[in-house]
Length: 312
Picture 1 (cartoon, helix red, strand yellow):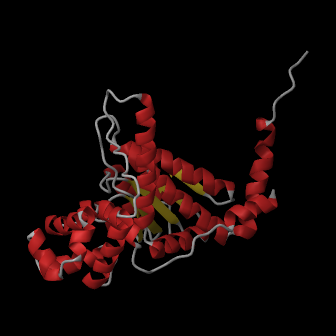
Picture 2 (picture 1 turned 45 degrees about the vertical axis):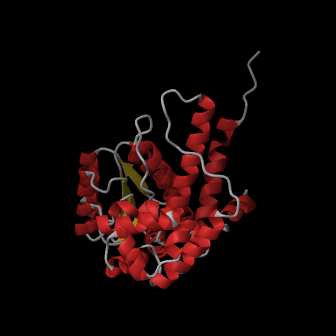
Picture 3 (picture 1 turned 135 degrees about the horizontal axis):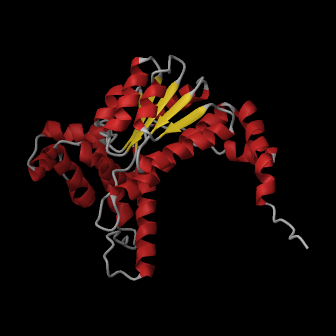
């Protein structure tokens, strides 16, 4: 059992501060576009829609094509993770070459009421994969590392979320409890606030809200922030109100909402990825105590998974 746990914990990804790879550029645009100004969105959409054409343009040419300014083009490039426009052009050229390599076009994830169930499965699978890729591409590794460090040494961890986000919060709390940490998920906004009042420096509060503007989640996080706890926001909007009270912000993919698939369903995929990254990071840093605790929880539950012999 110990070796299996250790194998899981040792599969950590190395952090990198380098610009996103060309293949990740489109994902970065999808994730960040909702938080951009309209002029920056035009630049971002242009480079994602026509990387080959934009790679051939100077900064002035791209500004003219999108009806923006050179400064807007440069700001967009930097927001997407590139030091300057020259680096963005190189990535665009790489993305264009990647797209021309003969890869089959991706299936659309727009589900209609008349879709056969086989198409529904394919579209949902594609959408889930895209959400995971977009979330990974947009996740700030330095922010994640700081959140992991805080949680690994926390006296107590409180987690706030309502609706679909409350399910993600419970998932994180259960994971942390199984490695011996004190963690509680609060879906009731009144209990969340009354518990947040008890936090102090050395504690951690995590708010999960896809929109970044859920009042029932923001209020307890603000209370925890004012009490001196380290605060973390897991959100699809890096510019959302919740980030005002967050020491560390972990962004998820901004999911597309459709008639048959509300944003809450899609957003949960990205949130669960971030939660898993946070948990594994904490487990790695607390391995000496986490591994025995996890092994003990497996042992305590083992009899519940063993087929019982029927009575005669």
